[in-house]
Amino acid sequence: MNAPRVPRLVRAAVLAVALGAMASAGAVVGNPAPVFAADAAALKERRDRAMEAVQVDGDALVRAKAVADLGALDDADAGKALAEVITALGFRWTQIETTHRQTLLAYEPFRGFTMKEQKDWAMKKKLGDQIEQEEERLEGLSVVAQASVTAIARMKSPDAVAAVDRAAAGEADGRARSVFLGGLVANPASKPADLVKRLQKEDSPAIKIMALEAMAARKDPAFAEYATKALTDTGWPVRRAAIAVLQALGDVKAVPALVAAMQTEEGVLLEAFGKALTALTGQTLGHFADVWRRWYEEHKDELSGQGAKPQVVKPGAKAPAPVNYYGVETVSRRVLFVIDISGSMKDPIGNDPVETTGVSKKDQPYTGPKIEVAKRILGEAIAKLEAKTTFNIVFFNHQVTTFQDKLVPATAEIKAKADAAIFDLQAAGSTYALGALRQAFEFAGVNGTPVTGKFDPLVDTIFFLSDGAPTDDSLDAAKPMPPEEILKAVREWNRLAHLTIHTIAIDPSVGKGAFVRFMKVLAAENHGTYTAIGSTK
Image (cartoon, rainbow, N blue to C red; front, side, top):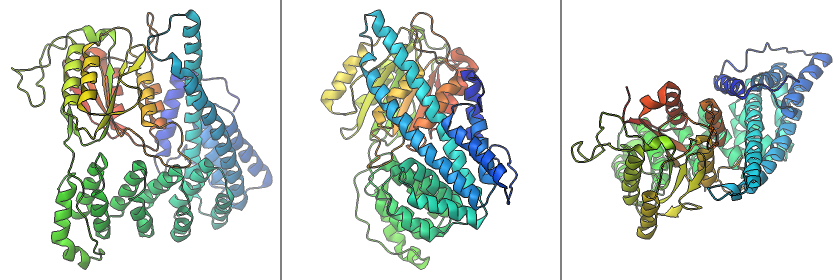
């Protein structure tokens, strides 16, 4: 375990392998052979290695395998030892997240272009490096946590499951409880009724989301009531997870509750409700709550005959007009635009004009400097936002700046200010995409694991526009940044919130294959759509 520090690009690749492996039910960090009667020496050895995986930073795949090997012993003592490891994991996670929040606050004054003194640049660099190191530690712990969840889920011994269950009942740390309960809910040997009773006492958004995601995978009808109640949770990520459970269960009995809950939504979850209802009923009525309400009223008796309890569904708000940005539409009410203003954006867009959505190629093609195209299309999108929509803009090159210091309502006055800010944009510098996306998630309020209280991110949809491969935050001698470093950071930030990220690549042929892959994967891993404009050859 005390291996030398691995180069960051290698660590990024290993982390991707670890995350991918643990997402697969039967291929979790290798295939550790179960040992059903572990002697004391074997148990101690595996416990010590698993504990070191929590306490010592290093290769994510090795750390995850240490936890998997302990769980594979699959007896009461192994369950107890794994519980001790998870408790230690929660403690260290809390420590690092607390330090990380303090570092982010310390970094705040150094954003933007205002620094003049060399000492300020030096401090900015120091804090920036510290932020990345802390994020790496949290990403590593996230891998260990997922390995722990999977280890619990794969236990077959009733004694092992019971040992973990006893530890979960007495665990005070919310992060550790989220791991315990996530694993127990996913374990087919656990009793759904007992778990639901325990979950009903939890107010941790992290625990609710992890449990609901495990329920969607397990597909036990006994979880339907808990998921139905979660449709009215105060945080939209919990509601999204609850919708996914009811869709996964595939029971039309959930239709009345889904239609009723849909009436109270105004934003991007309307799309999730529409997809779930389509999956359950076969009707393709889109994201329109009122249309689904009328359909339900017409088919209420038919659904009752299939066991669906009749429900009074009150009319909801009018469906919002969709935001259209480079042909990608969303009904989100919480939108963030992230715009590349690096030096290459001064170059003209590719030779073959691409038609602007809703406007003929002849009248208004994508031609001219890329920065001017970006400014025009962004201005048009913001001009059409409804007043109930909140939004902001993040501009990035080697620095990250913002239109406002928080999301603001799309009133006529605010939109006029945004138009003026967009008009003044100039292209210069490098392409610090990591910093821009970090700022986007900070605006959303997604900083670490939401252990208690309300978890209702202020952003649910991000539009990310760029024309070239990411770099670090240097001005004169910018170095390429491996895209996988950015992707793994976003995976951690978006682990529970599930924000939607749509990507727009301008002149992808200029950025070449690595850039295109980055933009495609960023969208695909975050519920988004990839769009290419300009030269694609």
